[in-house]
Length: 108
Image (tube, rainbow, N blue to C red):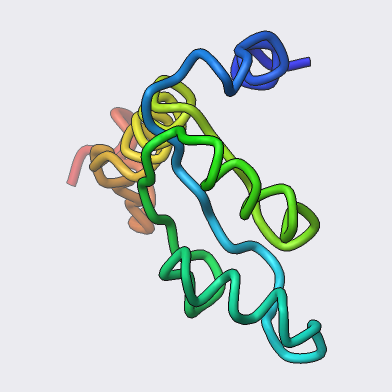
């Protein structure tokens, strides 16, 4: 288990003041009630993330559409964003020389 998944498994959502909600499954084919709930959460497209306060109302809405969304605390969200930023960081370019290596024996 990675450190991020271990952290994610141990942090209770109830302790976080803010929740980051990401829509991970498509809206077509879902019930009208679930569509209205996602609309109220301002989730309109896949892989979009919104930040909402951790209130009983929002937690109830999340419970209703829990198979369509992923919920993260602020610490989990920041850790995931930092991991993505490190992954996309600029790396030194790979230089490939296709010319044959000069030999020290040839004296011309």
